[in-house]
Image (cartoon, rainbow over all chains, first blue to last red; front, side):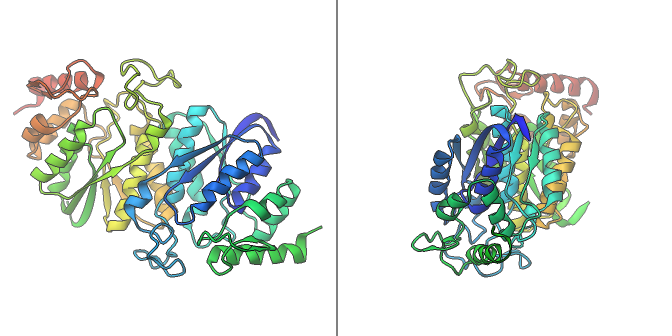
Length: 227
Length: 227
């Protein structure tokens, strides 16, 4: 418990960061959220992030990041690229890989935490079901935390409570932290921004890698972890 | 000598990065430059950067960074703040400190280097006359390099040839690398964006910390290092 400290949740409006927000709200005296508008194709998640922040009564700052649109090197941003393919310049990574995405997000969040005097930064990264993204692993975040604190004479700590959880366990944590209903109805995960059909596991196209992962996780949660 | 490798120079159009560009051009098979438009008050440096890149026949990519304008926490961006005072939120740092500025710049440059397949990133940081900025020191850049490479499965190296040089020694290096004339007439250093008077040491207001440092360095160069 960190009842005397404050936290900034890096908040995409997706399942993972909403679960983190529930977790943080139950542990910190003061919680804020930061959401990044990086010109992503699935911009619907920004609207969901704002809505969830309102429902949970936490401040939400939407920061526009225009770096990736200028680099134009990911199927998450360029609508002409196939989201299910391999990355154009990096054959060992998925097309959805955005170079240094979490590095930029965490650096911007760290600068915001400096300005607002917030103690911890909470991120929903996990390396279990990490979709092949190398910027979702502990050594990366630990090195970045060290660099950012050295570069600003700060002592802001990054926490990642989902790091070792499967998607099924993340559904379980949402249940335990009292946000499962919001996760199911309000969070956005789908890479294609599809919110036309509410499945049992949430909204989504049911075919992109993010939807498949979420659905599989939900089914495993139902089978093994639900009370 | 790195005649088989390529380099990306983080290029502000100032004395230090222009000296680095001269240094890189004499050492690499292929050199590109990246310049950041971060809504700085002294935006004149961007025009000088483009001009110097043209003079030296190297590609220049200007990337807009809108993070700091949204944070609005530095006298380098907010014209209402006194550039000579202490930082509003960080009394141990100067008002010109921009939280995580080099972290954002180096992260964006690293993403650009990934896209373009460039091997090294050259930056003009130095910790001798570093104006009190903690993001100009070796441990910071080393940690950041490690984090960025881990987070993107890359192996891009940061180099900082001016790290231990005084301003006087940087003038000397510009002379040795054949860019002293460009440094004097075309580079921009002044925090106030003043290019009305050409002093012996270059253009500038002659009163801001950056001008004072440049003038002092020039005088020491003349006294001790000039051939």
